[in-house]
Each structure stands twice: as structure tokens, then as C-alpha cells.
Image (cartoon, rainbow, N blue to C red; front, side):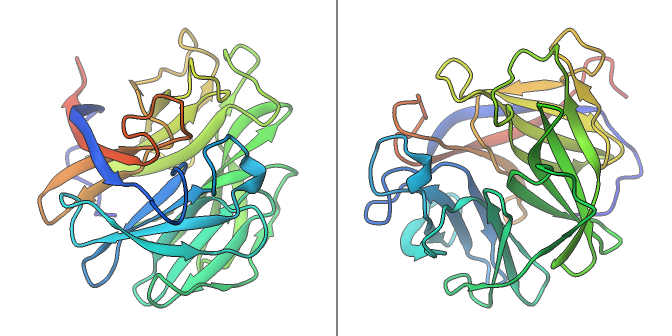
Length: 302
């Protein structure tokens, strides 16, 4: 994450151009759902994503991650193999690097944690959550490093029966302290499945603001590709979502499911990915698609 810009600009992200194939497994799975995309220290790109051995929607059988690798995002990623096959459900990986080692967090509850020196062989480690309310860290973790060296982890959860995005803080990537709910939904929000409608949170900092991308869905085909975007100067507070006519404005709505937002410094461009189960209208059936992401100036924005 880069240092804050001296001149903040209120921008709105938009998908630019068409989707193209980034990665599709042939031997290690039948599709890719929630995933993590990271550029390794040697410059190669790696993708880890939810999958299983058949096309049917059976989340309880998603028990490992498919691993793709490539020299660039333009050339696509090649299938490497399976990681984190430990006999339990393996959902929504989030991979970060502290400059020496790679750390992977995944769910569903309880949160799991693994480390690697080369992104292929992963060792399970204990993770400690402190001051954590029940169901606060339910699934779909995402980790962001701040300029001061602190780490923030965002995860979806449930509070009082409604979907929320929790935020945790850590100094060592092993001990995480619950801070607050960074985004809350209320009874006026249009979706409220038992597991919570807030999925796959992803936060980036750009031009003076933090942007929270969160897929808002009950998994039905009608809203499967529905990612809402919130903006805030504070990475800990994105307000409360009570529907599109509520006081907390949604600054963008993207047709994407569980997207990753990445900046490729080698080409100076931003990209967005999308994915999902089969027969859900994913742009690349059975795989992860990628498109350019543009930041447009908000009308009347400063």
C-alpha cells in the first residue's frame, strides 16, 4: 500500500473493456470461487481459489484450493496443483507477504492460518483472535497492510442476525484483535440470508480514500454478480448499509462476484477479477476472469 496522496480525490471504480480468461483449472477442480491473487517476490503472479471435484454446488465438499501461476496477468496463469488439502472445508483464501514469508488465512469458521516460503508448500499454524464477538469472523478474510506497519483483516460475519464486515488488527500476522464492525447492514437492507449477505470484502487505498468492495448476495442467480463499493477516509469505518435509499451511499455497483482488486505496477494499470460457481453466468465458465479497472472522477467530487 502506497503512502497517502497529498491531494485526495473522490473517485468511482468502473470495469473497463471486456472480461478475459485469467485462470481455469483442468485437473485440480471444476471451477474457481472466492480466490486470492498475489504477486510473489520473484515477480510471478499466483492465484489460490475455492474449488471441488465436480460441477454441482456443494460447498461442504470444497476442501482444498487450486493454485495457478504465471509470469504476467496478460498471459494468464497455468495450473500448478492443490494446496491446503487438510480434510476440512477450505473457503476464501487470503494471501499476503511480510517481505520474508507468505501467510494464508481461510475459513469458514474457525479461521485457519498457514505459512509458506515459496507459495507451494503450506504449514498450518495457530491463529489467535482476541476480543472477538461470536460470529464476527465468519468467513472470507482479506488482509491489508497500512503504512505504519500495522495489518488489518476484514472478514464477513453476523451481528444481531444481519450481515457485517468485521475488522481486526495485528502487528505480527498471528495475533488478531477485533476492533469493530467496519460495515453493518440493517433490517432495511434488501437481503438477509441466515449466513449474512455481505461476502468477500476487499479494501484498497487510492488517492486519499479507502474503498471497500463487498459482494452483496443471497447466492441466487439474480444477485450473484452484485458487488457494492463504499468509500471512506477511515479504513475502520464504512458506515451502515440500509438499502440504496439509505443514508450510507453506495458509490459504485459492479457486476462481479468475489472480486480481487490489484494494481500491476509493471504496466501501471488496475485490474478486477470475477469468479463463481458453474451455471451462475460467470464470464468465463469454470474459471476466473479479469478486466481493467478505471478510477473515474465522481461527479461534483473534489
